[in-house]
Structure formats: C-alpha cells, structure tokens
Length: 299
Image (cartoon, rainbow, N blue to C red):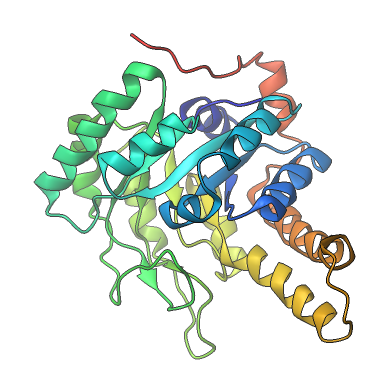
C-alpha cells in the first residue's frame, strides 16, 4: 500500500515508534527494503536522493510505485534532499507520495520561502512535504554530502518555521552526519536539543544521518519523539561487503549467482534497524486504522 508521509508518521507518532527511510539506488536495494518490510510486517519509507533518481531514471519508479501499491504493508516513496522546485516536481511526476525540500543551507527567511513554495504546490495534489532546520554533517563516505561543521537546530526557530511553511514533517539537526563515521570519530547526539524541540512542536520529527550512530542513542531519540530515521550507508555497506567477499572467490558473473547473499546481508541490517525503531509488526496498526491508499488529488 502506498501512502504519503503525513499518513505514515501521524500513526507512528500516536503509537510511539519510528519508521526507517532507506535510500534506494537500484532494483536490488528496492527489493531489500520491500522484502524486509513484508517479512517483518513493518512500514517502510523508500527514500531517493536526486543523484539516485538521476542514476535509476524516472521509468524505474513506475515499477517501484506499482510494487509498493500492491504490497500488504504501507510504504512511502519519498524524495530525499530535494534541492529545487524542479527536482521536487520531477519526483512528483514519477509518482512519489512525499518530498523533502532542503533549504537548510539558506538563511532562515529564504529557507521559509522556498519551503512554503513547495508546500503550496505539493499540498494541492496530496503530496506531503518535509523541511529541514539546521545542517547534517558529512563523513566523506556518502553521495548525500553535508557540512564540515554541524549547525544544530535552534528549538526557538522550529515552531515559527512550521507555522510559516505548513510542512508536514521537520528534519532536525542534533549531531548526526551522512555516511559511515571514521574510526577516530564517535558521534554524540544532543538529546537536550531534541527534547526542547519536541516540547515546542506537534508535527512528526525526522532524524537524518542515522547510519553508524550508537544504537542506544537512536533508540533514545525514538523514545523522545523521532518518527522517521534515515538509513542509507549502513545497509548499502553490508550489501557491498558481501559482494566483495563473493567476487574475491569466484569468476562467476551472473547476478543471480552473486546478489542473493548480498541482498540477505542488507536485509539483516534493515531488520535490525526496524527492531531498533520498534516498527516490526506495526504495519498491522495501519490496517487496523483502515488507512486508505494514497492517490494524487488534483484541485
């Protein structure tokens, strides 16, 4: 079942769990996310960065949308870190049910302006919108980028940003980074910042850069009030680690001889994240609530 992010995360918020957003860059990763979600009866978000959409091409998502719509568990197909109205509209035309406009590097008022522009367009067709305040770090190991020094979300700005933009979800910066952290860096999330933000706003909150952070910190963030956690590097790393192992011991070149074990390795990571987010078995809540499939609605 394909739904939008507002539908997905309002139920997560009410039932105190988070949903994983797993970046998908080809059919193998789409299979990993969908099969892991179905095997564990867990809701999931298929996230796609603009560079990943460039690689997979628009036509690929005809299959992705069809696969999600025909599943027994709820999915969102989400544009991750959309950088312009053009990239947002490309995702909308591909059938994405949710988008993120990332104006986090802009001055506050400019971030509000571009985010509101996207909200005004997308809400007319039932597409939910995520905005971002503060910045995510960059470990240098991810195509998603980031900044060298994290700018933490100012709790006092969060309520104003939500009110002026009308966003459905807010991505907050509390110390995470995109990619896998170097061995000499130990991430520490500022839970006091998250708690302060949570006390000021009512909409679902999002944590980017969820890979490679200590499990206990992610679990604590979910307990405080994070409803969506973005995961990319952790499960892709597991996939390609297994792929390298197989390729180092064989001259085979057929995908069906190489990829099945890689898919299983990545699915194990996705399942572990779902356990951490307390989302396993939670697809049943959406069925109990009789959540209706999402459809783009033109006004």
